[in-house]
Structure formats: structure tokens, C-alpha cells
Image 1 (spheres, rainbow, N blue to C red):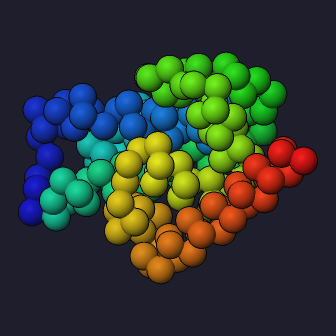
Image 2 (image 1 turned 90 degrees about the vertical axis):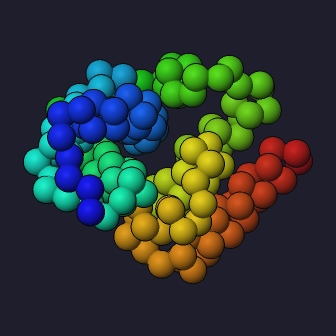
Length: 162
């Protein structure tokens, strides 16, 4: 069991704040809102008593960031008109090629469940087991979502080629 201290929370913030920010930004599409969600997520982390291990902490952070982001999107104060180009500029630290930019754009147009799963798998390099734990679903569900997401992307790509 891991008990959190100020030093360990600071270390966790250094390690995972960028990941939490990217997850939040991909959902809310607003830099300021995403920054607020990062802070809210880590404040909530400070209130947690114990975790089994660091993988449990990472999964908890992902799940909490996603839930807080969804709650923000449901709130009336959110403006949903930020251009995707601006979001993508602030989302990934490494510059994207035009093909990668187009692919990420297609992924972001998928339904939320597919989008989250594909994003975590391909852009956060998470394993299916980690995604399942983070989303609170079975590993089989993760594989099914990956299959459906790839199928949707394939259809979109074929449609663009016509």
C-alpha cells in the first residue's frame, strides 16, 4: 500500500500532470479548462488515503481526469467552439506530420468511448490492461472498442480516398 505525502504528490504531479492535461484537453478542448481540471484532479488525489501501487494511482488519475472533463463538458458554462487546430497545437508536445494531424482529427471525431480508448492506446502508449483498469471496463471491452474504432477510421479513410 502506498500512502501519499506532500513529496510523493509533488513527484506524481511532475510525472503525470502532462498526461492528465492531454486527456482533459482532448475532451474539453479548452486550455484553461484543462488546466483547471489538472489542478482539481490533483487536489482530489491529495484527499485519497491509499493506493495499491503506482499503476493504481495512474489509473485513478486517468479515470478522475476523464470524469472531471466530462462533467465540465456537461456544464452550461463551457463553450464548445474552439478550433481543433488550436487544440491539437496544445495537445501533443511533439509536432505532428500532416498525416498524423489528419489521423488525430479523425480519432477526435469518434464517439467518446472509442475516442478515449484509441487515444490512450495510440497516443499515450497504454496497454489494453491499463486502459481497462483506467476506464473501469474489461480488457475484452477495450479490445472491442479498439476494433470498432479502427473499423470506423478505416471507413473514414476509404471515404476520403473516393
